[in-house]
Amino acid sequence: MMREAVSLMGGYGITEDCPGFLGQKWMDAQLEATYEGPEAVQRRQLTVTMINELFLDQYRDWIREMREIALRRPGTGACTIATAMEMWLWSLNHLLQATDADGGKLYHGTRQGVTFPLADALCWLLASRQQILDLLELEAKGPLNPVVAEALPGLLPFLTDLCHVQAARASGEVARICAELVYGYNRHPAWDAECGTACGCETADPLQAVMTGQAEGHPVGASLLKSPKAGPCVRFDGMEAFVRLRVKLDGCLTGSRLAKDRAAVALTTVMIPEALDYPA
Image 1 (cartoon, rainbow, N blue to C red):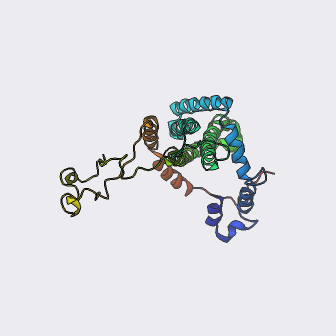
Image 2: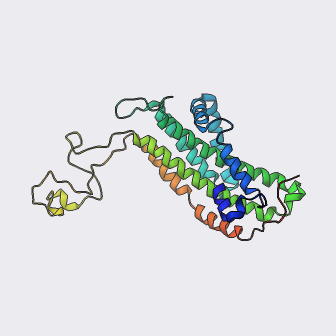
Image 3: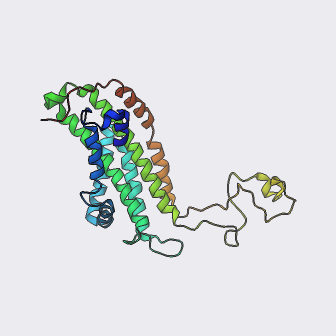
């Protein structure tokens, strides 16, 4: 995002005279990925900590917190984050117990193809949660600050929309990561004796049930020729709760694009002052 902010200003964005010190902030964003420890080390620490029962109890409190905020401020995207947090927690519990198609343990310290993406998903969620909490802090204490009080009536709706947009973005990333991890380590079915010949897909040509192969122009009785639409199809035994969470999360994205449009319109009214904006 910093790269995009700099590019919006053109060559001016990398100069010391650019309002907002965008060039310096851009460099800082790169340095932050290293100077507190390489990101791989940070992920490794997260994968150890995020399965701790104390953390998980606190995490459940954060879900309830987001639900309560959603009741008071539904436009913040807190409900979306709460649902995505539930999906992440379900996925973690599943991966802690499940094995891959070859019987290998999924959540393991050396299996970073599982643990690292799950840590990334957690960071998406906690960053968006903190953004919402920052908004509420500004709403509560902003009127007491003469520097920001005058601008609050316009600033709060804009920042609320940004929270909603980021909540949708974060939840989409979490849903993608969790779905890949939950489903991705199961072996895809093939046309064999174990799978059988029934595909069970609603998209299969209905003629196939009567004359296998005829719908594709093959001779009647060509039973070994399968429709390209027919699968073989995967099964979701034991995944009902995850499927419900996915559907619920999709519904929670309602209004997020409207929030993005409102934020975009609001940006067209922002004036960048000539004075440098860092406090003395």
